[in-house]
Image (tube, rainbow, N blue to C red; front, side, top):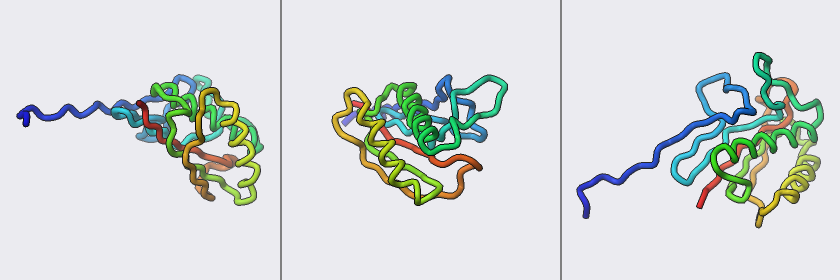
Length: 144
């Protein structure tokens, strides 16, 4: 047994250039070793300097597609892809959106190159999103 303590991988927090800086003390993504946690993403369009975040549109489809693109941007910034994602958590503001969301989500992942199997997922209804936002998604990835 060695007297040298094991090296703990550094924790790296980041925000992709397409995202606005978070409004509080958190990061869009954090990687430690081979684990990457993507914080909850919503359907904001890419950041425009000096302007507040803007939703992709009023519909669930517009917001879901942008939210998934935002998750993907954080994954890429952390050196990961959808293939590395092992868990997705989805928060919807309306139970009536389940079927439509699932259709959009399945369509998006079906078009993801190299994806050998969908990640585990959990969907819940959550009413705490800012006005006008319909969906939030976070993800956890494990890199090889």
